[in-house]
Structure formats: C-alpha cells, structure tokens
Image 1 (cartoon, rainbow, N blue to C red):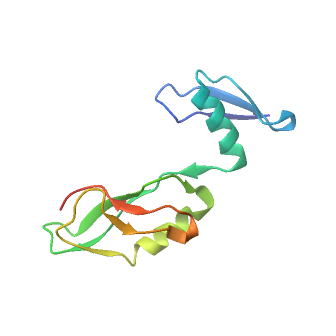
Image 2 (image 1 turned 90 degrees about the horizontal axis):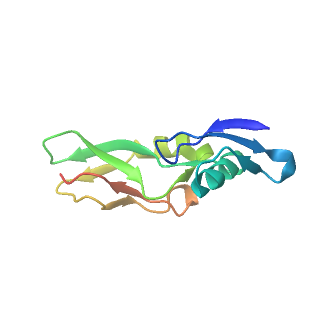
Length: 114
C-alpha cells in the first residue's frame, strides 16, 4: 500500500494505492483522483515549465511549457535540451518551439507573447 497526495486539484486528497490488488485507489474525492493515483505508481507524468533564450526581445528569457504531460523519467533530459533552444522575437503564445521532444509526442510551446 502506497500513500500519496493527489495533485489534480487544490483539494489534495490523501490517496492509498494498493499495488497488490490491481492498483486499487481509495481516499479520492473524485474520479480524477483514482486515475491520478493509479498512473502515479504505474507511469508518472508531469507538465514541464521552464524558459528558453530569446533574441530580439526586451527580456532575455521566454517562458515555455510542454503541451502535454511528459514521462517523469525524461524531465532532466528535456531540461538539458531546452538549453539549446533560442527563440526569435516576435513570438506568440502557443508557438511550437520543439516538436516530439525525446520521441514522446510532446511539444515545447511558448507561454508568452514577446
């Protein structure tokens, strides 16, 4: 039995996940908590937020994020790849800066218009 706190909403339900009984989840206040609890133990994912360099803008860094959750074990490799990205101003929110990062079908997108 593994105890975790659900992060799908601000409520923060205390979940218990029983790995020996098909990843049965208890303590969730909604169906999203059950899905989160099961996935967190079987294959955890996170949305990555960071910044990349930008040229031609009033600021040196552009905020970015993944457009979908990325497998947690690939987070550091993705951060390393972001060091090599330099955006060119002007850029709009939602512009894809890197596609299919690390072969995951996840894209890096701008989160601010500069």
